[in-house]
Length: 105
Length: 231
Ligand SMILES: Nc1nc2c(ncn2[C@@H]2O[C@H](COP(=O)(O)OP(=O)(O)OP(=O)(O)O)[C@@H](O)[C@H]2O)c(=O)[nH]1
Ligand SMILES: [Mg+2]
Image 1 (cartoon, each protein chain N blue to C red):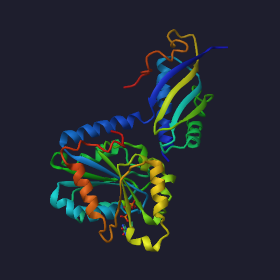
Image 2 (cartoon, helix red, strand yellow; image 1 turned 90 degrees about the vertical axis):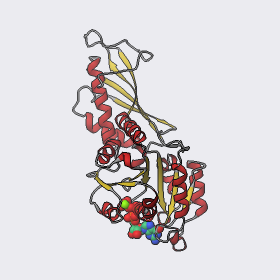
Image 3 (cartoon, helix red, strand yellow; image 1 turned 60 degrees about the vertical axis):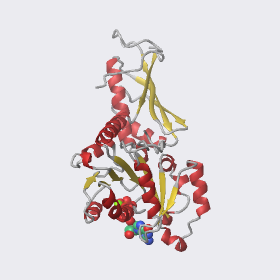
Image 4 (cartoon, each protein chain N blue to C red; image 1 turned 45 degrees about the vertical axis):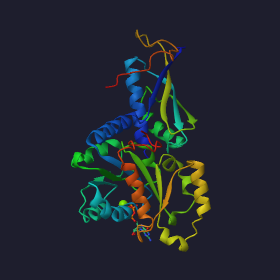
């Protein structure tokens, strides 16, 4: 029932991170949804579509949801098109680098 | 074709709520007040249990109540009738209380003058389970009229509970509640979760529930000692 507000938080975090990295198109978003979280993956998908349909940054993004055996709700990672020309769009495949602090607070 | 860049976020989707819950917890600790989050489906008897508990509690402890409801102040009026300080939160449609709402609600309570705060969550067996409020203990109420299969069907709330109150046991002979099925379901979801059989109507089991509360409140029992919640 609160999937919409959860996805609002996710798209917000993605937009902030994308802006900080000057990414203009996201192709894939990976979530981890715990079996015990009380949240339905299918509702998350529905809300994600609803909230991204008009957004050039996110409308082509595939949403991948991995189920975990806990109660966590995690925005794990995303894949974006590299090199819109702008300098510091991040290092390709830098998943071992420092965690994204993309524009929070 | 442009290459793909993978960006690791590893960020909790409820990070905002978790942060507010952490602040609540800190605030409650520094004020010396312990907090119980009562959760159940609509009508399981949360308010009735509070009405049965408060006359005793009020004589031994400094207590207050936060009532969470989608609409109306009915539950708060029931509590206020017992001369216990109460704040009503209306969630305007939201299916659960969150940590921010609780932070707002307690603004009008004298936290440093309290020993125990009961929070009655919105009647809903699903959504409240996901939202840490900063409470010390999570108590889930199930009534025998709802059926014995509920722990397995709504596992999240039972899995993170510190205590289960099985309410309306005065009605056991009128319904087909199968105690074996209930116990087995609970075991599969959270082995070892303590269960107390109670009736807010007749008062059966209230003594054991009060003993449980008193046990928690002993200074040597650290807050959140149940360890099943978010602490
Ligand atoms: N027979 C019987 N009835 C009970 C008992 N406890 C509660 N009730 C009745 O169950 C109904 C619902 O009780 P409430 O206390 O309002 O339930 P609630 O969980 O607070 O409901 P919401 O706040 O709407 O989620 C009322 O009519 C109560 O009188 C009980 O132990 N035995
Ligand atoms: Mg109530």
